[in-house]
Structure formats: structure tokens, C-alpha cells
Amino acid sequence: MGVVLILSRQKHPRDFSPLRQGRLLGRQRAPLGACSGSEPHPLPAARAVARRFLELRGEDFAGGLVVRAFEQFTTTEARTWWVHGQCILVTAHPDTPGDLPTGASFQSVASTMAALDLPFVTVDLVLRADGVWRVVELGDGQVSDRPKSTSPATFIAAIAGALGD
Image (cartoon, rainbow, N blue to C red; front, side):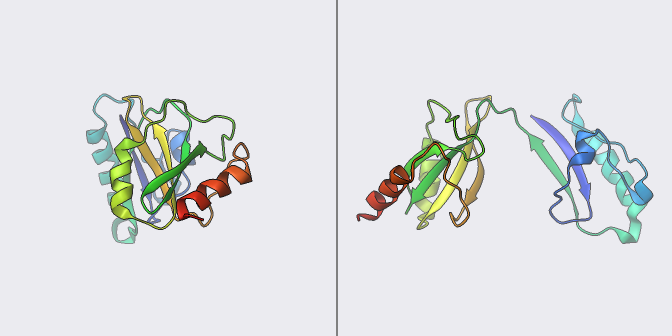
């Protein structure tokens, strides 16, 4: 698992292009350096970059520092649909409608979803290289697209069946 330090004045940074370019910028767009999980021990490098960033920003520092762990995934995302803690449908993710991961088993999240007992949510999952399904996103279903590969009739039947209609 790799680690990348993301420095931002935003509480939730959205622009990761400096990371893709292998650099981070500080005050007056001065290069700060970057660190990534490709280094054998990335935390000392991350601490050094963070110290330099804080030194340059001084009193102007706002927001926070974000450290992200990057994981190796072996499948595309699967979208799961849950009603009152029960998985009622597994589909491909709308971004990859023709690519539903095979052999998907979501028992690792079933007990958590049952405990939440939310009326209706979607949970996007992806398989890590170590065989564990990782929750990528849990949404309230208000803006959760149905992949084109799942017909409206299939989707409505699953929801209606879960609601007992």
C-alpha cells in the first residue's frame, strides 16, 4: 500500500493534478517536493514535506494536511443497492456498465449495512489485490445512476420486491 501526502488549503482537496505530475507546490508556487508509496518508507519523506509546507505557510496555513493510502485494485467497481440493510441488487458501476466484477461476495460489508439499517443506499465496492472488498462510496441513492446494462424493469422489480410491493 502506498502513501501520498496531499497539501492543500482546502479541507477536502479536489485537484490532484500536482500529484500526477510528481510535484507539490507551496507559497508562490515554489516546489515543495512530493513523496509517494513508491519509496520504501514514505512516512519520513511525508513528514519532511509537511514540515516544509508548514514552514513556508506560517500563519497563513489554513485547512489541513491529507495523507492518502493508495491500494491496488484488481476489478472495476460494483454498485450494490441496499434496502433496510439487505442487498437487493448488484450491478456494474454506471461508469463501466459492461463490466460487472465476477465472483463478487459482499459478506464483509453485509453486517455493517444491516447495522446501519438505512432505508435505501447504494454502496460501490472494488476488490483489492489482497482479496478484500473495499467500500469506495456509500450514497443515499438520490443521485445514484443505474448502469445502462441493468434494465429499468430489473431495477424496479428489485426495489418493489424489497419493499413488498
